[in-house]
Image 1 (spheres, one colour):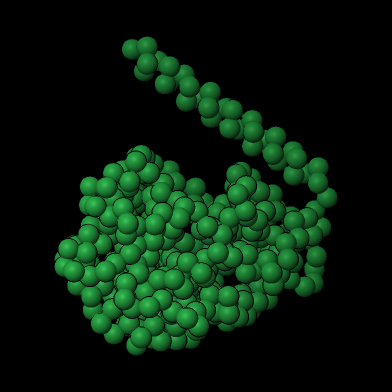
Image 2 (image 1 turned 30 degrees about the vertical axis):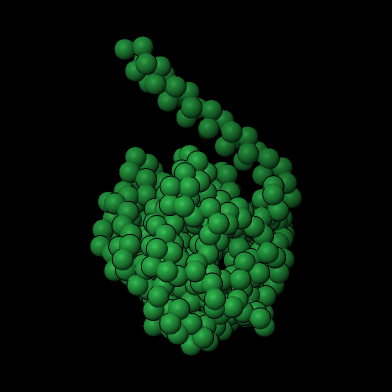
Length: 371
């Protein structure tokens, strides 16, 4: 009874404390001098285009960096607030209400949504906050058709102008190496933010099976291992599979380091389930690295038939699903049997469909329409 009583008491106290902080933040906003220009495109990103404390830009912030290079942030001299659903600032609702009340337009970039398999306890709360902001927008950019589909399913259909714009890549920064890795060792890569263990452990087992079949292989795992006990579990699996000499753990990396990481690989393995519009496969393709992924989320839209191979998984929302181990091994073998052709096709797809120049120009037209 005591623990139940405390939980009931803490809940309203927590709500009151949050309300107090929101009111304090709103008072800070109103004391600042906001200027809403009537002409020109003047963007605010609510500070979300900046790197984190380690100097690393990741997730939704990557595309904001492209925008801020073209449209530098004007926090208090702005007529458009541009927010990405996966990079909303603290007290985002308060900020949006305040700016909208003062005539600032909101362009909302919609990535993925929360769903039962991703967060069974809190997905409805997460989606309610996301839906509130999305429906405040004057224009919605969906990162893929899958993003539009999942948003319609969990957040509701918007009535404002909207379109699909796939995430961009700087094709000059992310480019193939003049000296690609030699073929005597098959070099595999998994990168990004690894929040589910199967995204790494299944790939370790794929590597093990390839090694047992007589292939000389090497795997680089780049990015943060983010699930509970991830470092311990990953290292234990490496030892169990006798892969000490075949696996390199790089940890987090910067956008400046990223091209070299891709260029050192033959194949990217990206098997996250229902990934809405991941930037990692686009960056890999731009570096001439084909992708093996999960036939779910927005991956079919990104890769089509040129960027690599997609492996069958069930289409459900209540559990995470991953490709079969034998399918992973077969896909790696198939790509490596004609890797030079795949390298060229992957690069061409990135250049044709995901260049940042086209993405920026489409945004310029959106901003003009909104204003």
